[in-house]
Length: 508
Image 1 (cartoon, rainbow, N blue to C red):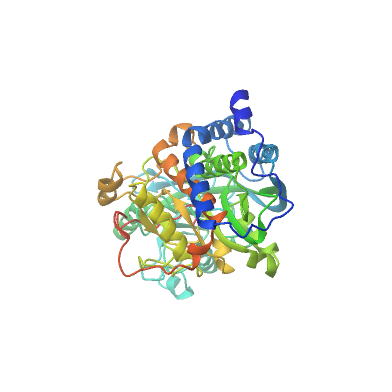
Image 2: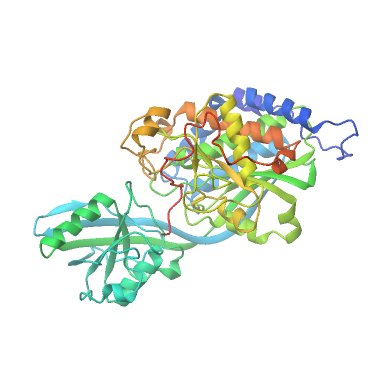
């Protein structure tokens, strides 16, 4: 590792700040961008980035098995990233803030009668807790419609006092559903998915929690609903979560040179969940970003634009690190950030190459991103097409750290390879892998370790990062070049069809 570190941290010719940040008249931004992007794509690699993943794994192994925000594992991960960047010549800073740390202590659901069986349930972030040992109560289903469990009238058909309310996802936030159930007298809520895959949800903030709440798969929820249609069901229910105020910090690094008025920003969240080391989620995006940043530092190029990298904390608790950062920006600072690219879960073992749908050409879920987002999508697609790599659009669901940037009008984009969503047969035909299982079967689990990385996806997405950094470090003109959304992008493997799942915990 000493030899590798010495090589990676070679004298950073790029980052020697120029006393004359302006470019000479003969400067051709297109040529400079093409040259740097080729160099970074050639030099950045999954092999080198994997060494950072090994460090993240070692950190998790030496702490509590995870790298969650507010833990020693995250603190050590942030310090590791900070040191690498500082030695490379970047201007590096910590951005500290406080948040509510959460850790699951118990998540159990079992049918007691009529036919005993265990049911898998996931405690929602910021849920209130049952007493230790839980409670035994009647399960009562909320009638299903387009807004199941969202209004008080949904609970009028039965007595929910002291029961566990079984509620289908959809129509409003999980926080609203459990609050309405609590108002009807329920002692707990079990919310089941309305699509395939696990339900890893959040109530948004600790103050929103009214009753203990957990998430179920669609199959588990529908089976329980069928049981209730046949008669009474008694369950044992225990949801407990540690919640306490803790400090954490983002790591922000930028080139000392380059025009601050044209800042190019890329980010990835560094924190894991408490259930595991988070090597794909999101050690992969963090390591890929770090590798490209270090390779940029070794380059002889002096970027015309300022390049800023961010490793966010507390993403898993609700995008808190990126929200804090964006909220603290002045109007002038916001205007200086010309684009933001996000990289989260870029090496899923059963993954699909997703590119965020900046122009809403897929007509799925949310609308288009801010002006310039369509161009970011187009640029990534064109790069992937040039490499012969198939890709699909994915919706801006707000489940990762691009969310706060979109909210203030900053053009945004990026890639991921999927989380708990289920791979379709069509996707398996294009991307390989196995249909009918999750893109990442170890999502938010202890098995999200070094064995959970697909090196092919990892390398492809590191190339995407490298190309974007090399291009936008010198040339932003493509952000104003019109996008033709009338026809699909050749070689895209289809512009729709993928399950539009982001990565972080869902709120509704």
